[in-house]
Length: 592
Ligand SMILES: NC(=O)c1ccc[n+]([C@@H]2O[C@H](COP(=O)([O-])OP(=O)(O)OC[C@H]3O[C@@H](n4cnc5c(N)ncnc54)[C@H](O)[C@@H]3O)[C@@H](O)[C@H]2O)c1
Image (cartoon, rainbow, N blue to C red; front, top):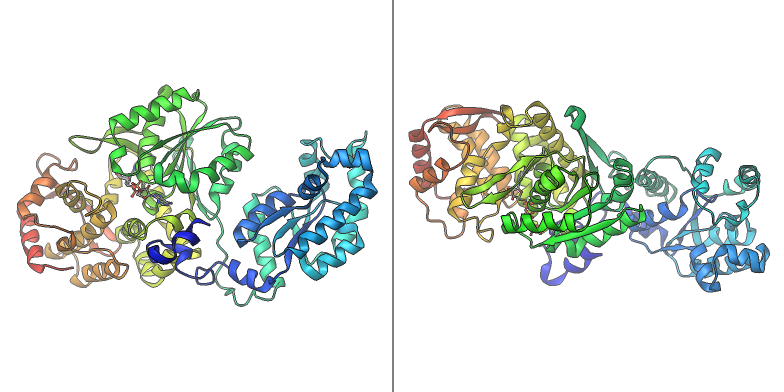
């Protein structure tokens, strides 16, 4: 996988996630399961339509094992489809071929192997699986199977006037034999991912490693946060493997709709193919437009390019714009979705931490003007947000840290317990697994609650700007040069400034401000202006940059200040002299 290649040697330590920690440390039991399996394969058995191939592929991906489909192997060995083999050679010959192919595949293990419905019924094959594999029966009820197999015409055993009766008879014969499988999982109408999660738990138990996995720590499971906006309410789904699931989920959201994917060059090279595959598997027509990576793409020329590409791809109003990327792509694609054909539906698949916890939620979209950032745009809520926490493994560590500053911000605004939890669990957030999902869920829930109360920032949505009046001024002074300062780094310094300023105004205890600085410093974020490369700004320059910020109302500066960690508030009338005095004092401090 991509991370494993790039996170060795020269790039060691530059990426977050699984490249720098073992799977076990990451809270993911995949490594332990692989170790316990040795050369044994996981063999999925059960009736046609039970989901063996779909679940098998996802399980293989989760475990980092190859996947094989015995029926597919038989077809390529024979150079014929299974119905053709049945018709031309008969069932007995098919079963012999099946037995040989499964024996060969088991010798090539470990892998995840999906077998045809009759394979496990053969005593020899069953014995071989018992020796060289761990069998899992995906057990499904008759109505579920009938619903699924009715959609397909290539089941030779069901080509007769009474397929339901045949299926019932096959179930009666086969279920007592399938029951000999080492593990039974009930196949039902939930997402494949839920079935995979359950299978992982059962596998861990069966392989005797359940205890090592720390029973207190749940497996990474998908979390859902709802943004309650009446008719425009939508869900933010957070968890692993969501790009793989995107097709299934989008098809459910908008049956029959095509997707115009907007992404950037960096993300396209790593994640676009997986998304397109997933959409294709779900039968969704796709087109894509790729823009250069970075803030410069939030421009009029790129906006025009994206709009024209969506129209050229013959996307209609009911079709979807899908933003696959960081905040830049989300803002640009969302704005295009807001205006093309007077408004298209849109799905966010945020791939940076900042985008997952902040920009993909809340419906602010837009591009930059020569007069400043985000000055041209629209409120346009997505219909769905899929925050795939695995894709963050390919993000540069610097970008991950930058997004982490926004995560910390939610604790500082109104959730002191979350801030304390981050102090204790930040390592898990960086390395992946359950802590990462939990941090993103909490952040999204905090943002969703604010957005539901004040969608258009007429009231307390402004709280989300904690640290941002300072941050925007720093970014403006360095000319938005990301090589010197990325947004989240500016926010980190801004958060510390907001707290120290609150201390200076007598609102907050000094030890709270130092605790904030200490935590941000401990994850490698800058906490003081002097850490910005080439920094030589004066207090006047900062004040001037602040005065150009759009949050200035009638000459007064609006700040978000704090009475304590988790107790921030909007201060609309802050005197410029107080800010100047604070900045002078902070310059003297010299370091974070
Ligand atoms: N709409 C809002 O409410 C809102 C809120 C906050 C920020 N924003 C906007 O978000 C933008 C910043 O977002 P950002 O920090 O995500 O920047 P970004 O979109 O430029 O992404 C940062 C870099 O990371 C790369 N990247 C993204 N995902 C990756 C992945 N999984 N693997 C490897 N590389 C990956 C990108 O290609 C880019 O080079 C700014 O334009 C800001 O104004 C908007």
